[in-house]
Amino acid sequence: RPGQDQWWRHAVIYQIYPRSFADARGDGVGDLRGIASRLDHLAALGVDAVWLSPFYRSPQRDAGYDVSDYRDVDPRFGTLEDADAMIARAHELDLKVIVDLVPNHTSDQHVWFQQALAAGPGSPERSRYIFREGSGELGEDPPNNWQSSFGGSAWTRVKARPDAPGSAWAEDGQWYLHLFDSSQPDLNWENPEVRAELESVLQFWLDRGVDGFRIDVAHGLVKEPGLPDWSGSVSMVTGVDEPPPEETQGSTLPGTLPGHPPMYDQEGVHEIYRSWRRVLENHPGEQILVAEAWVEPLERLARYVRSDEMNQAFNFSFLVTPWSAPRLRTVIAESYEVNDEVGAPTTWVLSNHDVVRHASRLGLAETGKGPNGIGIGDPQPDAELGLRRARAASLLMLGLPGSAYIYQGEELGLPEHTALPDDAREDPTFARTDGAEKGRDGCRVPIPWEADAPAFGFSPTGESWLPQPEEWSAYAVDAQTGVQGSTLEFYRTVLRLRRELVLGLGSSQWEPTFGDLASDGDVIAVVNTAEGREDVLVLANLGSEPVQLPDGWQVKLSSGPMSGDDGRTVPTDTAVWATR
Ligand code: ISL
Image (cartoon, rainbow, N blue to C red; front, side, top):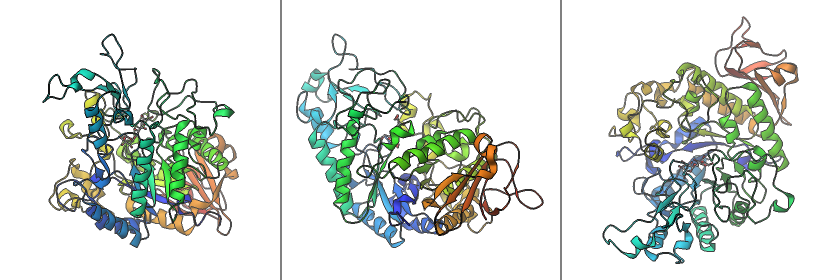
């Protein structure tokens, strides 16, 4: 089958959030040795690859997305030797390893930023970042009105060094740009030194044997020249209905589009990734680049995925779509359409470390809101409804051709922790919005492994950097193992069948039997077909009425109990795989 040798075209990739996966050393923070010791769980689960959020040296102001040394492991997570051992263990288990690369910004503790502060305005050291004079008569206002994704201005003024009042630092008064926390200064990608350095970091991890990179904020590296004011939204780059003019397609010049945010999705980013793809291609084996880019519409996102650019991009359009059959059908159809054009598979994703876990998100009465900081807490999600829909959504996603991402704990049906005490929260969003946004800690709570152990087996000492809810013993891996109908056993079966049937590699068509239902109603019905194996009907009932499985199809697997005398009725909020 074409592409079968290209593992990433159909891979199921499991996201590990290192600080919350497994803590071998007992300090309450997960680490690389902990990960290595638990990889057999993932092999048994049946995934093809793992992606690890950053474990590099970092002051952890944004949980490691603030890197102070790209070529070292943070002591909280272990050592470079631990990283090597973890990669080796994964490969022994036939699991690929994708690491996170954070090229948009460094930590303010990175030696480059420290040098930039010391060297002062106009220096080559400052030109690795985006320093500007302030506006207003005395430069006392930020250079423009850009807002940080975490709240507040995207600019911070260089402060006087406390031990040297009146020093050159106090005088220079420049501001630096940070699209995220003030501890995450944005790099200047116009500077060739920045480009060379990050390519060398890619090479460093390729040489350590990794199989790919997830590129953080891949749409953010290049900014529109002049840094013009912007008052639109930046949570997802939208509003670009027109493809860019022909002459800017594939050009290396930053393109300016009307209604397009000046800090995201500029044309100039594509040249960077083409260059990276060449770095990967010059390395033996088949490593991949995955774009984390909150870009809509899907046509625009697909421009990151090309044979000479990224291999994949997270399909966040799918993730943010509420529980509505017509809307999901549209996104699914468009996902195939735009990706077919570039000859790449689409991806599917429902949860990650930045969004409310889908077992809770889908249990919210109001489903129209965005994924970040949605009204969790008010009203509280309906846990039972959320889990039922989450299992249905996962069965739908994993039955569709393309690669799929799952986030640690979703295989356990873990909900969002909605009752974290405020003083336990670490996400900078919470402080930067004065608590108006609760932040992303609720999806980052350490994993329960053993129902009866301290910290549910996350850590041998019972420590846990975020408190785990008491009722999580029921979600523990050991409590679900071997239990028929548990979410964990459900995922294991799903992934085994997906592999056996090679569902990731098929092509898809809407099931004609459903006629109007499939095109207008509350049912999503897709037939996943591929030469040399049986067709699989993937059907999800999102409506409030049960529906009958069409004639000629036999149930292979369902996300919840089927009903009807003959077991051929698909209840509401349930999905099913069926074969003829
Ligand atoms: O505002 C956004 C862009 O349009 C965000 O959606 C942004 O793309 C997203 O928050 C990026 O997230 C990633 O980078 C952050 C980090 O905090 C997240 O954990 C990471 O996934 C900064 O490195």
